[in-house]
Image (cartoon, rainbow, N blue to C red; front, side, top):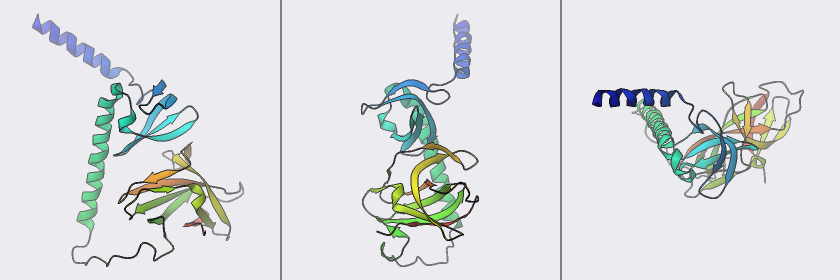
Length: 216
């Protein structure tokens, strides 16, 4: 009897593993978050240590793990743990690659250079089509809230164009989804953000030379 129970359990679990998981593999028709927000046709697209990027009918946004209903918490907990493990791996790699004989540089004022604003340091790492990749390091002790209008890009023709929208990108580095108009960065954290730029259709690909804070 026990043998058949075990076999039956194995078959059931195997069948369950073949089914598409709501939210991860297929959209949830109506996702009601704990803050009362309702996202229709919601599907998780990316996972960090603190939030999940969710694409839904009408756009995309980041959602804190704690806001998801209880039935999604077990599978999201596994995704969060994987994100934490990946972050720890990156940090460990960075530490092992750091030159041990070099003394730490003296602390600098967070307002001492043009790359600093809102307590954050801006680093431009490249662009594709009309999307620029930015790294923002929040060196302050407060949450930074950033909007696309705070940035401008300079092209190799001398043109200055504004940032228009935070976006998510696909595997080819091109715009995939639009995000909230404001993105927050926790104190002491570093995030990568993708900024859509108001480039003319005639502008060649990879023509953006840099992205800067917009002058007040």
